[in-house]
Structure formats: structure tokens, C-alpha cells
Length: 108
Image 1 (tube, helix red, strand yellow):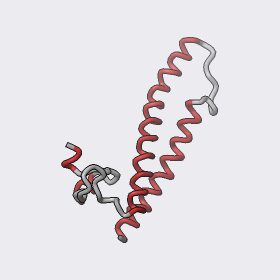
Image 2 (spheres, one colour):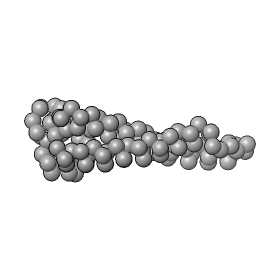
Image 3 (cartoon, helix red, strand yellow):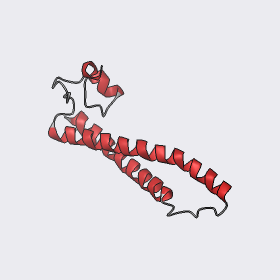
Image 4 (tube, helix red, strand yellow):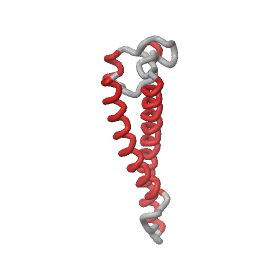
């Protein structure tokens, strides 16, 4: 149980950092912190760069969701229980993929 408390604290810290980063990305993509160029060619380049930021934002939102779900599983006492088959997720798998909700067999 103490191990799960430490893990939960780490997940919560990661979550706080990701939420802050995601907030900055979202603000930037909404042009809240910048001015769009007037020139069409400059604007095209500007918006092309946003595609990378949009991908980062999407990945950040996915990571936020997986951390929130893992924290909930810890709170419910089901952190190491496969959500697919109900068996215990292998400790080695959880070490490699700490937020995974399924065992290796179900992942295949």
C-alpha cells in the first residue's frame, strides 16, 4: 500500500505538470499569447508549425486521461487489476507501463 501511495504522489505531480503544459499549449494555439502574421506566406508557415503543437496537445490530453484513470484505480484499490480479464497485471508490466489498465495477455 505504501508503494501505491508513493506512485499516486508521482502520478499527481506528473498530472499537475501536464495540466500546466497543456494549458500553455492550448492558450498558444488559440493565439492568446501571440499575434498572427499579416503576410500570407508567413501565416502559412506559422500555421504549419501549429500542427506540431496540436499533436503535442493531443498527446498531452491522452497522457492526462491515463494518469487520472490510474489515480482512480489506486484510490479504488484496483490499480494492478486488469480491466479486461480481472486478473492481476504483472508487476514488470506496471514498471514499464505504470498507467496501463490491462495485462500483457489482454494487450495481445
